[in-house]
Amino acid sequence: MAKRLLIVDDEETITFSLYQSFIHSKKDYEVVTASSGEEALERIHETPFDLVVTDIMMPGIDGFELLNSVKRDYPQTDVIIMTAYGSSIYKEKALKEGACDYVEKPFEMKEFKKLIIDLLD
Amino acid sequence: MSRQFENKKKAAITLNKFHSALEAGSRQPTLPGEPDYKYKYNLLHKRFRELEQVFDFHRGIIQTISSGIITINSQAEITFMNRAALNLFNCDYMQVQGTQIHALFADKNEAEILLNQILTEQKMCESTEVHFRSQNGDIFPAGLTTTLQKQPEQKGVSGAIFIFRNISNITNLRRQIERMDRLATMGELSAGIAHEIRNPLAGIKSSAQVIEESFSPGDFRAQLASRIVKEIDRSNDLLKRFFNFARPSRARQDFHNIEMIIDGVYLLMAPRFKKKNIEFEKKFADALPQVYVDESQLEQVVLNLFLNAVDAMPEGGKLTVFTGVRKTAEKSDLHEQEQMVFVDIADSGNGIPQSKLEKIFNPFYTTKSDGVGLGLSISSRLLEENGGAITVESKLGKGSVFTVLLPIATKINR
Image 1 (spheres, rainbow over the protein chains, first blue to last red):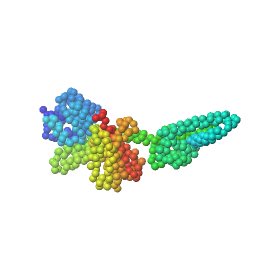
Image 2 (image 1 turned 30 degrees about the vertical axis):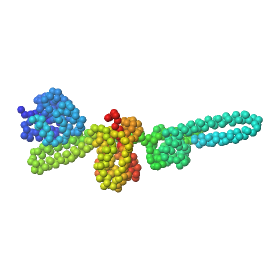
Image 3 (image 1 turned 90 degrees about the vertical axis):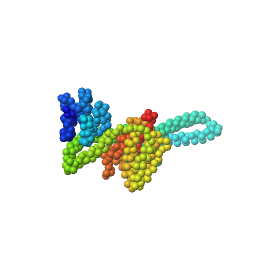
Protein backbone atom coordinates (compact mmCIF):
# COMPACT_ATOMS: atom_id res chain seq x y z
CA MET A 1 0.00 0.00 0.00
CA ALA A 2 1.34 3.40 -1.01
CA LYS A 3 2.58 5.65 1.79
CA ARG A 4 0.29 8.58 2.49
CA LEU A 5 1.55 12.16 2.77
CA LEU A 6 -0.56 15.15 3.80
CA ILE A 7 0.70 18.68 3.04
CA VAL A 8 -1.03 21.46 5.00
CA ASP A 9 -0.54 25.17 4.29
CA ASP A 10 -2.81 28.13 3.64
CA GLU A 11 -0.24 29.22 1.03
CA GLU A 12 -1.54 27.33 -1.96
CA THR A 13 1.59 27.88 -4.06
CA ILE A 14 3.52 25.88 -1.49
CA THR A 15 1.06 22.97 -1.27
CA PHE A 16 0.72 22.94 -5.07
CA SER A 17 4.48 22.97 -5.76
CA LEU A 18 5.16 20.25 -3.16
CA TYR A 19 2.29 18.19 -4.55
CA GLN A 20 3.61 18.55 -8.12
CA SER A 21 7.09 17.66 -7.01
CA PHE A 22 5.92 14.38 -5.42
CA ILE A 23 3.47 13.24 -8.04
CA HIS A 24 6.16 13.68 -10.71
CA SER A 25 8.76 11.79 -8.69
CA LYS A 26 9.39 8.11 -9.13
CA LYS A 27 8.10 7.39 -5.65
CA ASP A 28 4.68 5.90 -5.40
CA TYR A 29 3.22 8.10 -2.68
CA GLU A 30 -0.37 9.13 -2.16
CA VAL A 31 -0.15 12.91 -1.72
CA VAL A 32 -3.06 14.93 -0.38
CA THR A 33 -3.13 18.69 0.29
CA ALA A 34 -5.18 20.78 2.73
CA SER A 35 -5.36 24.57 3.01
CA SER A 36 -6.28 24.75 6.71
CA GLY A 37 -5.94 22.89 9.98
CA GLU A 38 -9.65 22.04 9.94
CA GLU A 39 -9.47 20.56 6.45
CA ALA A 40 -6.35 18.60 7.43
CA LEU A 41 -8.13 17.01 10.43
CA GLU A 42 -11.07 16.04 8.18
CA ARG A 43 -8.70 14.30 5.72
CA ILE A 44 -6.86 12.57 8.57
CA HIS A 45 -10.09 11.35 10.17
CA GLU A 46 -11.19 9.95 6.80
CA THR A 47 -7.98 7.98 6.36
CA PRO A 48 -4.88 8.35 8.56
CA PHE A 49 -1.55 9.42 7.03
CA ASP A 50 2.03 8.24 7.51
CA LEU A 51 3.39 11.78 7.46
CA VAL A 52 1.87 15.24 7.87
CA VAL A 53 3.84 18.32 6.75
CA THR A 54 2.24 21.46 8.17
CA ASP A 55 2.76 25.18 8.33
CA ILE A 56 2.40 26.87 11.75
CA MET A 57 0.62 30.13 11.05
CA MET A 58 -2.79 29.37 9.62
CA PRO A 59 -6.15 30.93 10.34
CA GLY A 60 -8.29 28.69 12.58
CA ILE A 61 -6.51 25.56 13.77
CA ASP A 62 -2.79 26.34 13.55
CA GLY A 63 0.12 24.00 13.00
CA PHE A 64 0.79 23.41 16.72
CA GLU A 65 -2.85 22.51 17.42
CA LEU A 66 -2.80 20.16 14.45
CA LEU A 67 0.44 18.61 15.73
CA ASN A 68 -1.10 18.03 19.16
CA SER A 69 -4.29 16.48 17.70
CA VAL A 70 -2.33 14.17 15.44
CA LYS A 71 0.08 13.11 18.17
CA ARG A 72 -2.82 12.48 20.55
CA ASP A 73 -5.10 10.55 18.14
CA TYR A 74 -2.61 9.08 15.66
CA PRO A 75 0.71 8.62 17.50
CA GLN A 76 2.09 6.56 14.57
CA THR A 77 1.83 9.56 12.22
CA ASP A 78 5.00 11.62 11.87
CA VAL A 79 4.69 15.40 11.68
CA ILE A 80 7.10 17.92 10.13
CA ILE A 81 6.58 21.55 11.03
CA MET A 82 7.46 24.26 8.52
CA THR A 83 7.34 28.01 9.07
CA ALA A 84 8.38 31.34 7.67
CA TYR A 85 9.21 32.54 11.20
CA GLY A 86 12.91 31.95 11.61
CA SER A 87 12.84 31.72 15.37
CA SER A 88 14.52 29.08 17.47
CA ILE A 89 11.65 29.32 19.96
CA TYR A 90 9.29 27.71 17.41
CA LYS A 91 11.82 25.03 16.65
CA GLU A 92 12.23 24.10 20.32
CA LYS A 93 8.46 24.11 20.81
CA ALA A 94 7.81 21.96 17.73
CA LEU A 95 10.36 19.31 18.67
CA LYS A 96 9.24 19.33 22.30
CA GLU A 97 5.63 18.75 21.28
CA GLY A 98 6.46 15.72 19.18
CA ALA A 99 7.32 16.96 15.67
CA CYS A 100 10.02 14.80 14.10
CA ASP A 101 11.58 17.77 12.28
CA TYR A 102 11.36 21.49 11.68
CA VAL A 103 11.94 23.25 8.34
CA GLU A 104 12.30 26.96 7.66
CA LYS A 105 10.76 28.55 4.59
CA PRO A 106 11.92 29.09 1.94
CA PHE A 107 13.33 25.56 1.92
CA GLU A 108 15.59 23.71 -0.49
CA MET A 109 13.24 21.43 -2.38
CA LYS A 110 15.83 18.67 -2.81
CA GLU A 111 16.71 18.58 0.90
CA PHE A 112 13.11 18.81 1.97
CA LYS A 113 12.08 15.98 -0.35
CA LYS A 114 14.94 13.82 0.91
CA LEU A 115 13.82 14.40 4.49
CA ILE A 116 10.25 13.38 3.61
CA ILE A 117 11.34 10.32 1.60
CA ASP A 118 13.67 9.16 4.41
CA LEU A 119 10.79 9.36 6.88
CA LEU A 120 8.29 7.63 4.62
CA ASP A 121 10.61 4.85 3.49
CA MET B 1 18.21 90.17 48.44
CA SER B 2 21.83 89.30 49.06
CA ARG B 3 22.83 92.94 48.72
CA GLN B 4 20.52 93.84 51.57
CA PHE B 5 22.15 91.21 53.74
CA GLU B 6 25.59 92.43 52.70
CA ASN B 7 24.65 95.99 53.75
CA LYS B 8 23.41 94.76 57.11
CA LYS B 9 26.61 92.83 57.62
CA LYS B 10 28.67 95.94 56.86
CA ALA B 11 26.58 97.84 59.37
CA ALA B 12 27.28 95.16 61.98
CA ILE B 13 31.01 95.42 61.35
CA THR B 14 30.89 99.22 61.61
CA LEU B 15 28.99 98.89 64.87
CA ASN B 16 31.58 96.45 66.13
CA LYS B 17 34.33 99.01 65.45
CA PHE B 18 32.27 101.65 67.19
CA HIS B 19 31.91 99.36 70.17
CA SER B 20 35.66 98.80 70.32
CA ALA B 21 36.18 102.55 70.27
CA LEU B 22 33.66 102.90 73.08
CA GLU B 23 35.36 100.19 75.11
CA ALA B 24 38.62 102.03 74.72
CA GLY B 25 36.88 105.21 75.88
CA SER B 26 35.35 103.45 78.89
CA ARG B 27 38.64 103.70 80.68
CA GLN B 28 37.78 107.35 80.95
CA PRO B 29 35.81 108.45 84.03
CA THR B 30 32.12 107.47 83.66
CA LEU B 31 29.64 110.12 82.73
CA PRO B 32 26.18 110.50 84.15
CA GLY B 33 23.58 108.32 82.27
CA GLU B 34 26.21 105.98 80.80
CA PRO B 35 24.79 102.64 82.15
CA ASP B 36 21.53 103.15 80.24
CA TYR B 37 23.37 103.99 77.06
CA LYS B 38 25.64 100.92 77.39
CA TYR B 39 22.67 98.61 78.01
CA LYS B 40 20.95 99.83 74.85
CA TYR B 41 24.12 99.50 72.86
CA ASN B 42 24.69 95.90 74.07
CA LEU B 43 21.11 94.95 73.19
CA LEU B 44 21.53 96.40 69.73
CA HIS B 45 24.82 94.61 69.29
CA LYS B 46 23.25 91.29 70.35
CA ARG B 47 20.51 91.74 67.77
CA PHE B 48 23.08 92.40 65.06
CA ARG B 49 24.94 89.21 65.97
CA GLU B 50 21.69 87.26 65.77
CA LEU B 51 20.98 88.85 62.42
CA GLU B 52 24.44 87.87 61.26
CA GLN B 53 23.80 84.26 62.29
CA VAL B 54 20.49 84.22 60.43
CA PHE B 55 22.25 85.70 57.41
CA ASP B 56 25.00 83.04 57.53
CA PHE B 57 22.40 80.31 57.95
CA HIS B 58 20.38 81.37 54.93
CA ARG B 59 23.43 82.05 52.83
CA GLY B 60 24.68 78.55 53.72
CA ILE B 61 21.44 77.00 52.53
CA ILE B 62 21.37 78.95 49.29
CA GLN B 63 25.02 78.37 48.49
CA THR B 64 25.18 74.68 49.35
CA ILE B 65 21.87 73.58 47.85
CA SER B 66 22.40 71.42 44.75
CA SER B 67 19.75 73.25 42.72
CA GLY B 68 20.75 76.32 40.78
CA ILE B 69 19.17 79.58 41.96
CA ILE B 70 19.14 82.78 39.93
CA THR B 71 17.26 85.94 40.79
CA ILE B 72 16.37 88.63 38.28
CA ASN B 73 14.84 92.08 38.58
CA SER B 74 11.84 93.34 36.63
CA GLN B 75 14.13 94.14 33.68
CA ALA B 76 15.20 90.47 33.52
CA GLU B 77 18.69 91.43 34.67
CA ILE B 78 20.54 88.93 36.83
CA THR B 79 20.79 90.09 40.46
CA PHE B 80 22.08 86.90 42.06
CA MET B 81 23.36 83.41 41.17
CA ASN B 82 24.15 80.76 43.76
CA ARG B 83 27.20 78.49 43.62
CA ALA B 84 25.34 75.58 41.96
CA ALA B 85 24.09 77.92 39.22
CA LEU B 86 27.58 79.35 38.65
CA ASN B 87 28.97 75.80 38.40
CA LEU B 88 26.26 74.67 35.99
CA PHE B 89 26.88 77.65 33.74
CA ASN B 90 30.62 77.43 34.28
CA CYS B 91 30.83 81.18 34.79
CA ASP B 92 31.95 83.88 37.17
CA TYR B 93 29.29 85.97 38.87
CA MET B 94 30.99 89.23 37.96
CA GLN B 95 30.67 88.30 34.27
CA VAL B 96 26.92 87.91 34.37
CA GLN B 97 25.83 90.29 37.12
CA GLY B 98 23.40 92.84 35.71
CA THR B 99 23.24 91.14 32.30
CA GLN B 100 20.01 89.90 30.77
CA ILE B 101 19.14 86.32 31.73
CA HIS B 102 18.24 85.65 28.07
CA ALA B 103 21.91 85.02 27.40
CA LEU B 104 21.81 81.89 29.57
CA PHE B 105 19.17 80.22 27.40
CA ALA B 106 20.09 78.03 24.44
CA ASP B 107 17.22 79.45 22.43
CA LYS B 108 16.71 83.20 22.70
CA ASN B 109 13.13 82.96 21.42
CA GLU B 110 12.28 80.40 24.09
CA ALA B 111 13.77 82.79 26.67
CA GLU B 112 11.78 85.73 25.33
CA ILE B 113 8.48 83.86 25.52
CA LEU B 114 9.22 82.47 28.97
CA LEU B 115 10.28 85.82 30.45
CA ASN B 116 7.30 87.54 28.96
CA GLN B 117 5.09 84.96 30.66
CA ILE B 118 6.82 85.48 33.99
CA LEU B 119 7.35 89.23 34.12
CA THR B 120 4.37 90.47 32.11
CA GLU B 121 1.70 87.83 32.39
CA GLN B 122 2.89 86.92 35.91
CA LYS B 123 2.67 83.20 35.22
CA MET B 124 4.95 80.82 37.05
CA CYS B 125 6.75 77.74 35.74
CA GLU B 126 6.52 74.42 37.56
CA SER B 127 9.12 71.80 36.56
CA THR B 128 9.19 73.10 33.00
CA GLU B 129 11.89 71.69 30.73
CA VAL B 130 14.11 74.40 29.27
CA HIS B 131 17.51 74.36 27.59
CA PHE B 132 20.35 76.46 28.99
CA ARG B 133 23.71 77.18 27.42
CA SER B 134 26.76 77.28 29.66
CA GLN B 135 29.64 79.68 29.06
CA ASN B 136 31.66 77.00 27.27
CA GLY B 137 28.82 76.46 24.81
CA ASP B 138 27.41 73.18 26.20
CA ILE B 139 23.65 72.97 26.04
CA PHE B 140 21.96 71.18 28.91
CA PRO B 141 18.31 70.48 29.66
CA ALA B 142 17.01 71.81 32.96
CA GLY B 143 13.86 71.38 35.00
CA LEU B 144 12.87 74.95 35.89
CA THR B 145 10.54 76.29 38.56
CA THR B 146 10.03 80.02 38.96
CA THR B 147 8.64 82.19 41.74
CA LEU B 148 7.51 85.78 41.35
CA GLN B 149 8.80 88.50 43.62
CA LYS B 150 6.41 91.33 44.40
CA GLN B 151 6.94 94.39 46.54
CA PRO B 152 4.07 95.09 48.89
CA GLU B 153 1.84 97.97 47.78
CA GLN B 154 3.38 97.92 44.30
CA LYS B 155 1.76 96.90 41.08
CA GLY B 156 3.55 94.42 38.81
CA VAL B 157 6.50 92.20 39.50
CA SER B 158 9.74 93.37 41.05
CA GLY B 159 11.63 90.28 39.98
CA ALA B 160 11.64 86.51 39.86
CA ILE B 161 13.52 83.57 41.32
CA PHE B 162 14.62 80.76 38.99
CA ILE B 163 15.24 77.40 40.65
CA PHE B 164 16.49 74.63 38.36
CA ARG B 165 18.34 71.35 38.09
CA ASN B 166 20.37 69.84 35.27
CA ILE B 167 18.21 66.95 34.02
CA SER B 168 20.61 65.53 31.41
CA ASN B 169 20.61 62.13 33.15
CA ILE B 170 16.83 61.96 33.24
CA THR B 171 16.59 63.13 29.63
CA ASN B 172 19.12 60.49 28.55
CA LEU B 173 17.21 57.75 30.38
CA ARG B 174 13.96 58.91 28.82
CA ARG B 175 15.56 58.88 25.37
CA GLN B 176 16.86 55.36 25.95
CA ILE B 177 13.40 54.16 26.95
CA GLU B 178 11.84 55.83 23.91
CA ARG B 179 14.51 54.31 21.72
CA MET B 180 13.86 50.83 23.13
CA ASP B 181 10.15 51.28 22.55
CA ARG B 182 10.82 52.30 18.97
CA LEU B 183 13.15 49.36 18.46
CA ALA B 184 10.65 46.96 19.97
CA THR B 185 7.91 48.27 17.68
CA MET B 186 10.28 48.15 14.74
CA GLY B 187 11.27 44.63 15.73
CA GLU B 188 7.71 43.37 15.87
CA LEU B 189 6.98 45.08 12.58
CA SER B 190 10.03 43.61 10.85
CA ALA B 191 9.23 40.14 12.16
CA GLY B 192 5.70 40.41 10.76
CA ILE B 193 6.92 41.73 7.42
CA ALA B 194 9.65 39.08 7.20
CA HIS B 195 7.04 36.35 7.73
CA GLU B 196 4.69 37.79 5.14
CA ILE B 197 7.47 38.05 2.56
CA ARG B 198 9.01 34.66 3.24
CA ASN B 199 5.79 32.79 2.54
CA PRO B 200 5.45 33.95 -1.08
CA LEU B 201 9.24 33.59 -1.49
CA ALA B 202 8.91 29.97 -0.38
CA GLY B 203 6.11 29.45 -2.90
CA ILE B 204 8.13 30.98 -5.75
CA LYS B 205 11.25 29.05 -4.80
CA SER B 206 9.62 25.65 -4.51
CA SER B 207 7.71 26.19 -7.76
CA ALA B 208 10.90 27.23 -9.55
CA GLN B 209 12.68 24.18 -8.20
CA VAL B 210 9.91 21.88 -9.45
CA ILE B 211 10.28 23.46 -12.90
CA GLU B 212 14.07 23.15 -12.69
CA GLU B 213 13.80 19.45 -11.84
CA SER B 214 11.49 18.77 -14.76
CA PHE B 215 14.06 19.87 -17.36
CA SER B 216 17.54 18.55 -18.02
CA PRO B 217 20.24 20.70 -16.36
CA GLY B 218 21.45 22.11 -19.70
CA ASP B 219 17.99 23.23 -20.78
CA PHE B 220 17.62 27.01 -20.81
CA ARG B 221 14.31 26.66 -18.89
CA ALA B 222 16.10 24.82 -16.09
CA GLN B 223 18.75 27.57 -16.07
CA LEU B 224 16.14 30.30 -15.89
CA ALA B 225 14.39 28.49 -13.03
CA SER B 226 17.75 28.15 -11.29
CA ARG B 227 18.25 31.92 -11.57
CA ILE B 228 14.88 32.49 -9.93
CA VAL B 229 16.00 30.28 -7.03
CA LYS B 230 19.27 32.20 -6.66
CA GLU B 231 17.50 35.56 -6.57
CA ILE B 232 15.05 34.24 -3.99
CA ASP B 233 17.98 33.11 -1.83
CA ARG B 234 19.52 36.57 -2.15
CA SER B 235 16.30 38.24 -1.02
CA ASN B 236 15.97 35.78 1.83
CA ASP B 237 19.49 36.54 3.06
CA LEU B 238 18.56 40.21 3.27
CA LEU B 239 15.40 39.31 5.16
CA LYS B 240 17.44 37.21 7.56
CA ARG B 241 19.58 40.21 8.40
CA PHE B 242 16.49 42.25 9.18
CA PHE B 243 15.04 39.35 11.08
CA ASN B 244 18.13 39.07 13.28
CA PHE B 245 17.64 42.72 14.07
CA ALA B 246 13.98 42.19 14.88
CA ARG B 247 14.56 39.27 17.18
CA PRO B 248 18.21 38.83 18.01
CA SER B 249 19.03 35.37 19.24
CA ARG B 250 18.95 35.08 22.99
CA ALA B 251 22.16 36.36 24.57
CA ARG B 252 24.36 33.52 25.80
CA GLN B 253 25.95 35.44 28.63
CA ASP B 254 29.08 34.34 30.34
CA PHE B 255 31.89 36.14 32.12
CA HIS B 256 34.48 37.72 29.89
CA ASN B 257 37.31 40.22 30.02
CA ILE B 258 36.20 43.20 28.01
CA GLU B 259 39.81 44.09 27.16
CA MET B 260 40.23 40.75 25.39
CA ILE B 261 37.08 41.32 23.36
CA ILE B 262 38.26 44.83 22.36
CA ASP B 263 41.75 43.53 21.53
CA GLY B 264 40.21 40.78 19.40
CA VAL B 265 38.18 43.27 17.38
CA TYR B 266 41.20 45.59 17.14
CA LEU B 267 43.27 42.81 15.55
CA LEU B 268 40.54 42.46 12.94
CA MET B 269 40.43 46.20 12.32
CA ALA B 270 44.16 47.04 12.60
CA PRO B 271 44.86 46.85 8.83
CA ARG B 272 41.93 49.15 8.11
CA PHE B 273 43.04 51.64 10.78
CA LYS B 274 46.49 51.71 9.23
CA LYS B 275 45.13 52.16 5.72
CA LYS B 276 42.87 55.01 6.83
CA ASN B 277 45.67 56.66 8.81
CA ILE B 278 43.95 56.20 12.16
CA GLU B 279 46.01 56.08 15.33
CA PHE B 280 44.61 53.63 17.87
CA GLU B 281 45.14 54.06 21.58
CA LYS B 282 43.75 52.05 24.46
CA LYS B 283 43.52 53.32 28.01
CA PHE B 284 42.28 50.34 30.00
CA ALA B 285 41.66 50.65 33.73
CA ASP B 286 43.65 48.39 36.06
CA ALA B 287 41.95 45.36 37.58
CA LEU B 288 38.74 45.83 35.66
CA PRO B 289 36.07 43.36 36.79
CA GLN B 290 34.79 40.78 34.31
CA VAL B 291 31.60 41.51 32.43
CA TYR B 292 28.61 39.20 32.01
CA VAL B 293 27.83 39.30 28.29
CA ASP B 294 27.44 37.29 25.10
CA GLU B 295 30.94 37.46 23.64
CA SER B 296 29.99 37.34 19.96
CA GLN B 297 27.22 39.90 20.40
CA LEU B 298 29.61 42.25 22.15
CA GLU B 299 32.21 41.75 19.44
CA GLN B 300 29.55 42.79 16.94
CA VAL B 301 28.82 45.95 18.96
CA VAL B 302 32.50 46.93 19.25
CA LEU B 303 33.05 46.18 15.56
CA ASN B 304 30.09 48.38 14.60
CA LEU B 305 31.42 51.24 16.71
CA PHE B 306 34.96 50.88 15.29
CA LEU B 307 33.61 50.83 11.73
CA ASN B 308 31.55 53.95 12.41
CA ALA B 309 34.59 55.66 13.93
CA VAL B 310 36.58 54.90 10.78
CA ASP B 311 33.81 56.41 8.66
CA ALA B 312 33.72 59.46 10.92
CA MET B 313 37.41 60.16 10.24
CA PRO B 314 37.82 60.10 6.45
CA GLU B 315 41.00 62.17 6.70
CA GLY B 316 42.45 59.96 9.45
CA GLY B 317 42.58 60.76 13.14
CA LYS B 318 42.73 59.16 16.53
CA LEU B 319 40.57 56.48 18.05
CA THR B 320 40.87 56.07 21.81
CA VAL B 321 39.24 53.35 23.86
CA PHE B 322 38.85 53.89 27.59
CA THR B 323 37.55 51.32 30.05
CA GLY B 324 36.66 51.55 33.70
CA VAL B 325 33.92 51.21 36.25
CA ARG B 326 31.25 53.88 36.39
CA LYS B 327 28.55 54.47 38.89
CA THR B 328 25.21 54.50 37.10
CA ALA B 329 22.62 57.06 38.13
CA GLU B 330 20.67 54.53 40.11
CA LYS B 331 19.38 51.01 39.94
CA SER B 332 16.62 51.04 37.34
CA ASP B 333 15.02 49.00 34.61
CA LEU B 334 17.79 50.14 32.31
CA HIS B 335 20.68 49.59 34.66
CA GLU B 336 20.35 46.51 36.75
CA GLN B 337 23.47 47.33 38.69
CA GLU B 338 24.56 50.42 40.52
CA GLN B 339 28.04 50.04 39.05
CA MET B 340 28.80 49.00 35.52
CA VAL B 341 31.85 48.57 33.35
CA PHE B 342 32.07 51.29 30.74
CA VAL B 343 33.83 51.33 27.39
CA ASP B 344 34.26 54.80 25.90
CA ILE B 345 35.09 54.78 22.20
CA ALA B 346 36.23 58.29 21.30
CA ASP B 347 37.02 59.43 17.78
CA SER B 348 38.53 62.70 16.61
CA GLY B 349 36.14 63.01 13.68
CA ASN B 350 33.77 65.74 12.64
CA GLY B 351 31.19 65.05 15.32
CA ILE B 352 27.46 64.64 14.94
CA PRO B 353 25.11 67.65 14.90
CA GLN B 354 22.71 67.82 17.84
CA SER B 355 19.73 67.48 15.50
CA LYS B 356 21.01 64.11 14.25
CA LEU B 357 22.17 62.74 17.60
CA GLU B 358 18.70 61.66 18.62
CA LYS B 359 18.11 59.81 15.37
CA ILE B 360 21.30 57.81 14.99
CA PHE B 361 19.96 54.87 17.01
CA ASN B 362 16.80 54.66 14.93
CA PRO B 363 16.62 51.67 12.60
CA PHE B 364 17.28 52.46 8.95
CA TYR B 365 18.65 55.93 9.80
CA THR B 366 21.92 56.48 8.00
CA THR B 367 24.12 59.35 6.89
CA LYS B 368 26.30 57.11 4.73
CA SER B 369 25.61 56.75 1.03
CA ASP B 370 26.19 52.99 1.23
CA GLY B 371 24.77 52.40 4.73
CA VAL B 372 21.69 50.40 5.64
CA GLY B 373 21.24 52.27 8.93
CA LEU B 374 21.08 49.24 11.16
CA GLY B 375 24.55 49.20 12.82
CA LEU B 376 23.78 51.38 15.83
CA SER B 377 20.21 50.18 16.25
CA ILE B 378 21.41 46.56 16.23
CA SER B 379 24.17 47.48 18.70
CA SER B 380 21.66 49.17 20.96
CA ARG B 381 19.38 46.17 20.79
CA LEU B 382 22.17 43.68 21.44
CA LEU B 383 23.31 45.65 24.48
CA GLU B 384 19.76 45.74 25.73
CA GLU B 385 19.68 41.92 25.43
CA ASN B 386 22.85 41.79 27.54
CA GLY B 387 21.58 44.13 30.26
CA GLY B 388 23.79 46.95 29.00
CA ALA B 389 23.21 50.29 27.33
CA ILE B 390 24.77 52.70 24.84
CA THR B 391 24.93 56.49 24.91
CA VAL B 392 26.66 59.10 22.81
CA GLU B 393 28.12 62.55 23.28
CA SER B 394 29.38 64.55 20.37
CA LYS B 395 30.94 67.93 19.69
CA LEU B 396 31.01 69.36 16.22
CA GLY B 397 34.53 69.58 14.91
CA LYS B 398 35.94 67.66 17.87
CA GLY B 399 34.51 64.16 17.61
CA SER B 400 32.14 61.73 19.24
CA VAL B 401 32.32 59.48 22.27
CA PHE B 402 30.18 56.36 22.31
CA THR B 403 29.80 54.88 25.77
CA VAL B 404 28.89 51.24 26.20
CA LEU B 405 27.76 50.21 29.68
CA LEU B 406 28.03 46.54 30.59
CA PRO B 407 26.89 44.50 33.57
CA ILE B 408 29.65 43.37 35.90
CA ALA B 409 29.92 39.60 36.45
CA THR B 410 28.67 39.08 39.98
CA LYS B 411 28.49 36.12 42.31
CA ILE B 412 24.83 35.71 41.37
CA ASN B 413 25.35 35.23 37.64
CA ARG B 414 28.44 33.19 38.30
